[in-house]
Image 1 (spheres, rainbow, N blue to C red):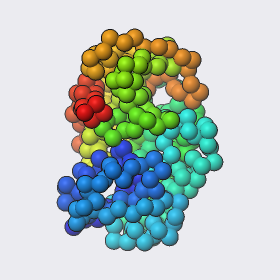
Image 2 (cartoon, rainbow, N blue to C red):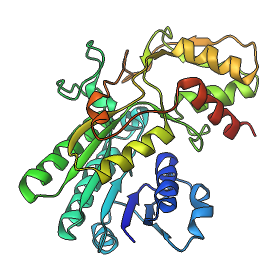
Image 3 (cartoon, rainbow, N blue to C red):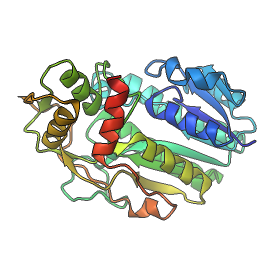
Image 4 (cartoon, one colour):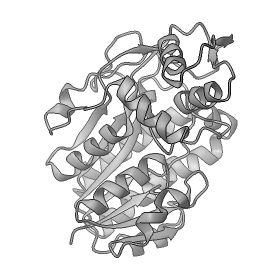
Length: 308
């Protein structure tokens, strides 16, 4: 049985990935410090013989060295993953996202892991006007979070070149879906909108709402992550839907699907937010990535989860 470690595996994306890998015949070790992850996300998985849960942090290098023994693939998702939180706490974000990534790479190198799959972010592109975003564009990070993600990408590439450790960096675009926490202070826009509308509150839009995002359903991201691990691909790849949606369109579709007649309210833009984002996913298609969910389908699944 092939063995994998998922850092951040009790989180929103990580728990979906753990579920898919465990169901696909892998032995899965989930590492999570539960600072933003939730043990309930993997409660059913933890009872399976091929799933182990370890409470710990990627800042603990000796722990990683132990966990990575005999591992085939390391999926590195552990991070402080909020732009606004990184602005509030840049030092903590650096420690987890950069030092933590270096620790993962060191442990993977020392234990001869076959490949490290690193969760990066579309935020590294910044607010450059050209669309869609392509992997060969010059990055322009605009928050401590996006700086850490870009630095982690560079570390991965250097470990490939210098130490021969295969790495692949997946630039995720605005992921949403079941298990995304609507109650976090730094909640993403989709669970935030669903929660507010379901409670009869108007969704709050920061800015004029004409900013665009490439919203990507979590099951598509999981499929991309596994495909990238099992392929010979290396380097940097965009993982998105390839479709552009304004925040105004998202708000009105959410209101419609929840069955409400609310009207959004508007507040000033937030620092660090970018204006437009859209992925060119042609490079990822070469290793078999093909998103299956459009926004309405993904929203319906997410609403069913958040509003039982």
